[in-house]
Length: 308
Ligand code: HEC
Ligand code: HEC
Image (cartoon, rainbow, N blue to C red; front, side, top):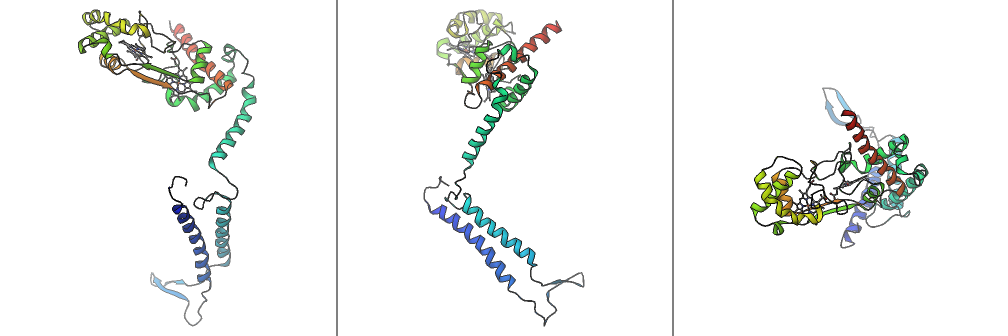
């Protein structure tokens, strides 16, 4: 209600609510006064199917009292809870404070479960089946909407099960990523590279780094322009985890593959953010999540070596 600029609407809503509750009572009182008239046959006069008539009896007592009770209940309810315009109710209940208290209660209830992981090395947590089940549930509730329920990501959202890391896969790096979030920023490089043709040549050079299909002539013409990219992606194009600059020599493409995509990124740059989780999750929950993610990429390695 605080969104309204004048207090008029608060009073207006309160008045309508109260008047309609009282009107129900009045209506009930008026209809219950009606007596059965003995001089007619006491029907409404409607006839269906030849001989079906509707009796005009007053409402049964039990039904009337139920109605009265519901009206009284609603009056008590709007006195205690916020429901009448801007009046906040005698109990001062708000959905905000209810949410905060419930969160605090939940935190208290789960913190003993996670306490044992506060000091354990992440390598040990990875081998604790119970912790991994907790990690999976945390992941489904907090991360799957972006990284996918199988953690394989999608365009713009990194795959967390492979061996390609924008920000590194040491325990500290992963915990830092989840706790503080990350923001990968690549500025627009069009002016640094030059003409459309030079940008297209450079895109072919970038594709050649990973052995992707490319035009060899264009790629060798584009090689010189890569010096503009080396500060972040490295002279060899292998990336830099301190900046989140991706490795361009592997065949993993966060933002899609092909000349058009790469030309688009060179021209427009890229800004991609992973939101910080420290306000939402406790340090112990983040440790368990870090272990869960590392176990996913490790088991992917094990599977790959098993296949070979
Ligand atoms: C709103 C979407 C979103 C949510 C929710 C989200 N992430 Fe991310 N995450 C991203 C994006 C986007 C990136 C890539 C950031 C970049 O490109 O700089 C990322 C990057 C990461 C990375 C770094 C990957 C690498 O290659 O270094 C990790 C680890 C990660 N997220 C884990 C998590 C975990 C664990 C959760 C749940 C607690 C989570 N993310 C929730 C969007 C999200
Ligand atoms: C200031 C640092 C910086 C410079 C300079 C820079 N980049 Fe980037 N680049 C990044 C970052 C950071 C990302 C990742 C953005 C994100 O988080 O999604 C990126 C992403 C990319 C991608 C997407 C990779 C993928 O997996 O989809 C390509 C391609 C790319 N850069 C090419 C270039 C080229 C070519 C140049 C030189 C003209 C260049 N970059 C210059 C920082 C830089």
